[in-house]
Length: 352
Picture 1 (spheres, rainbow, N blue to C red):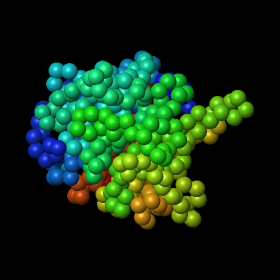
Picture 2: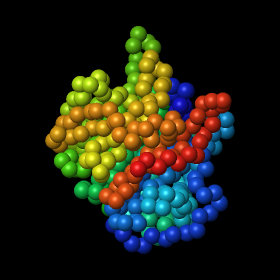
Picture 3: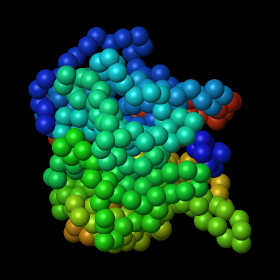
């Protein structure tokens, strides 16, 4: 995996959807460093998993700005309508969907951008927020972001502002505007962390993992974060973690995929990379985190059919989850493979 700036191989929830005919290819072109999120709609036939942006190849580093959605009930991709304007090509975008919209925060191409774009599912158009007149998060890429359906806000945390400059600030987006939040406690700086909304008994956005630059004896190594935090709308609360004794140490990952499993009431974590002395090793394990209360829980290795399915996906693939009770499907898209040469892939893996 390669991060361009630092790591080198180291309210309309149920109606109003416009269903255009698929344009061009039957699924999105191959990519990595893309953003993928479900809209959180539990109504039958209304759930959408939106993929945006990314990079289509290592040799040319061609960034993308197309928007597609996947329906788990039909297992089909559709190129989304976007109106006359849309964000420029980019990767490493802060991305979350919910409440009838998707919010794209920052990301970058040659450098990090200070931009916010809002995609309205109905009527299917992009709108850019004027960051010169209104508050926007400072430029960054690879922040963590998730939608909170209880507090009706998109929550953004951290990211990389410039080469080896990592952030631990928090912004929330609701009512068409950003608010900078001064949390009494907060996680340490990081980028490429995962965020997801955890339902009862938590009912908060949860942050996990990521990476930072650890300098020892004048040598810098990227090191993965192993902690978990929850945003209660005012501050970040640390989550106590234990591990099932038969599973040894729990996961410690950069760039992980994380989502709430509506069937089991657990967080599922897979993909991403372990870091050893700065070296990156794709993670093919799957883990589950079961909350015993709102502030603590236990890790255990996934031994279900989901593990067997997730093991097959490419490194760098992104995961989104259909939250309808009849489905609960976990879908992976994109990533890359290194042999015989490093190329982006456009594989869709449906894990029921």
